[in-house]
Image 1 (cartoon, one colour):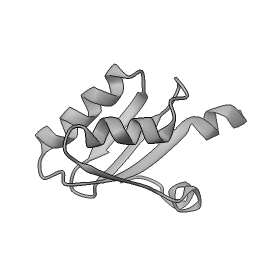
Image 2 (cartoon, rainbow, N blue to C red):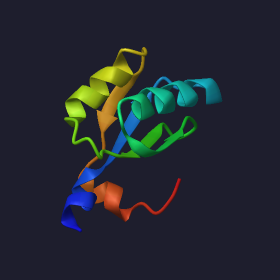
Image 3 (cartoon, rainbow, N blue to C red):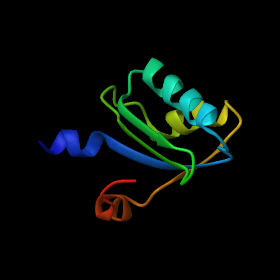
Length: 84
């Protein structure tokens, strides 16, 4: 159980302005093996299950390669959020 909790990741991505932006990030993360990818361009929130245990810094770098700025969310704040 605990390992699944640790694999859930959440990021804030600045610079998304449309559904195409969010779709590009979603496709990139899914290609890297992430599951349950949910991207909301309006709030800038990106959530995914990191089943491949990829370092968060590598995930962030991959998104930044698309031209966005990534900020990690504090784990406590992420667990308090229900849905976006």
